[in-house]
Image (cartoon, rainbow, N blue to C red; front, top):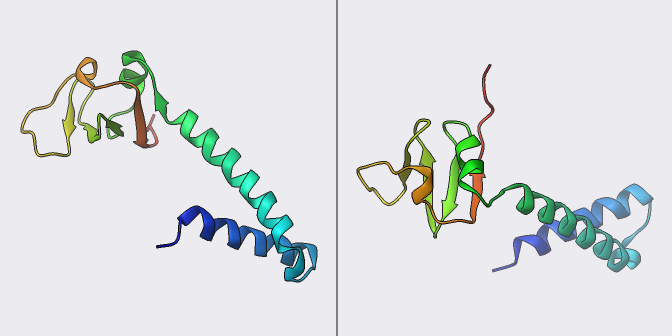
Length: 110
């Protein structure tokens, strides 16, 4: 199976080439530019999605989903997170393993 980053890189490189009005001989240069752009973007996304403290978890809106200790958790209300592994009870933020990664952050409504 092809790495998704490679597929994205190649598509971005081809788009760069089309925008520059060139054909494929310069594709490697464009792939290099695409790799750099994708890496920088993914790094920024990963950093923004990283939760280091309980306070950061508590600041997430209801409906947020995070990955903690290999399990996805859904923020049910301002107190409880429910695990994706069918645990019947919610747990408070301080019981989640940190660091955690934000998988989904809903827009807060005023």
